[in-house]
Image (cartoon, helix red, strand yellow):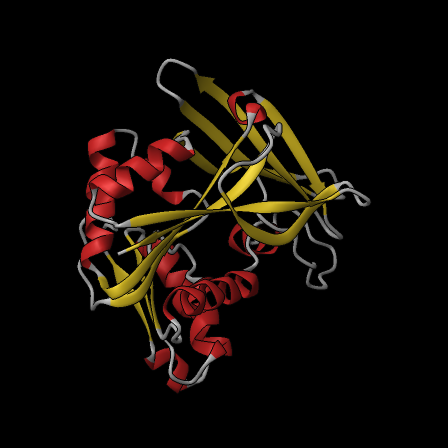
Length: 276
């Protein structure tokens, strides 16, 4: 499931042996500039002031955090992940293209987003459906409560979700980029538990591939379930922003609008905004 399509950086002779799977992920799945702008826009709309500090849970290579501190000289970011390997990759990557001041305002933190405490921030984000690793309602509420504790008085928790009847199916979607093909593989789904196993594969023009470059074992949470858990965790209100559709181009747009109802599409992307 691709949130946004990004423009490929120019690379030549990309193969399974020469490609870095983290770079491929960032190029095919993430659009950090959009997400930084979205966080800033929604926070200011809600609170009439600028968002200055964020915490990026399940941060992986922490690209949102790096883009955040680059966006404004006063911005601060805390990036939390329990995987030391990916944090080391992020640190090495940042050292090449970030100033000392920017690095000082970005804190890479090894820890479990479920329980880790940091300085309080204006916004906590958990994007790319990362919080779906929590398959039990009690675990999900525990995570939301921890996010609540790490927010300032007017803080926002921002999440994303996908759904639609195709989300319950076993299927593969391929997206062609200049130097590789991104493959989203919904490998299995259990209707009794709503457990979903997905993979990301990458294929190259020379015929080589990186199979199961990334694996996800999630629970497919519905929007009503997520909202109910957020309210139970202490958040006072939630809003849903749904992705728009361009009828002429027959594709998703990068516009997300606040909605209380929408069509029963085969597939959709949404952001959930929870207010403290």
